[in-house]
Length: 80
Image (cartoon, rainbow, N blue to C red; front, side, top):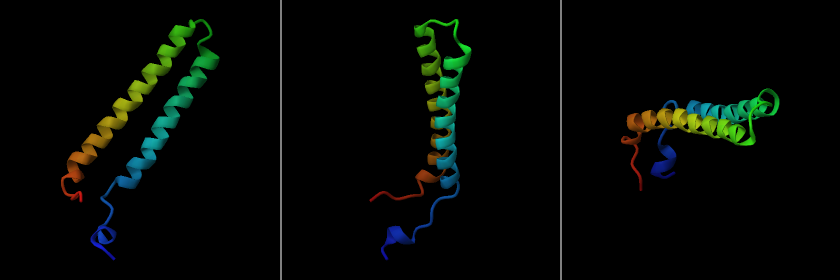
């Protein structure tokens, strides 16, 4: 065993990965369902804008979550 194999996984990593997957796919699925079924009066450009806004909001949520985690635990981990 080398040093990398003996290091423990930082707390909260698995949970953040699971939440990231759920937020990403949940946001995209919600946006597509909204555009497909509830936004019939919107133009195609407005429908694309709705999806882009959801993607940007998802990136902001995930970015905030991961930056907070990396500031807390990232400096403790040594990159080789």
